[in-house]
Length: 197
Image (cartoon, rainbow, N blue to C red; front, side):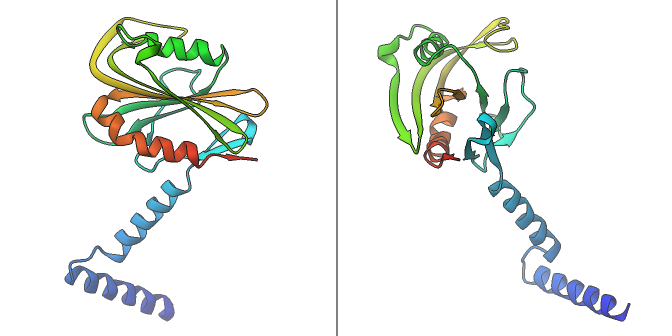
């Protein structure tokens, strides 16, 4: 009991000392470190664990708006100008899905899209970037569309991960152009850090 009391007294004294110096308390430091470690450790797994990526720390996990979405995030976690990020496996072909994404912007054609292909380990990433007036479906996704709301000055980064066995994983970020521009480095870092098992 005495040992416990001494340790508690020492921790209390240390917390007071930190506070007097203008630093956060030991308890707050511990909590912050735990939260940071949890964020860094968050790994997304696809195709039965064959492929993993590290989620950018600034993204906040939110409940998917559609049951076909495997993961959904808000990026960044807070603020008025946030983007929606969805991750899911799907079919339909690479070109068909790129065409569908282009069609979600008013008046755009394939010539307006920036399309890049890169190989990371055994996975091919097809990266599509678009900007303009986004026709946001207010329904439950591409297979349950609802009323369309036109969002000016918006952008999209869409990534199709073509896995070694032919499976496809779709990562799609849409939101205000300024937000997409700010979040782009995190998306690219996530794709470039992809790991195959």
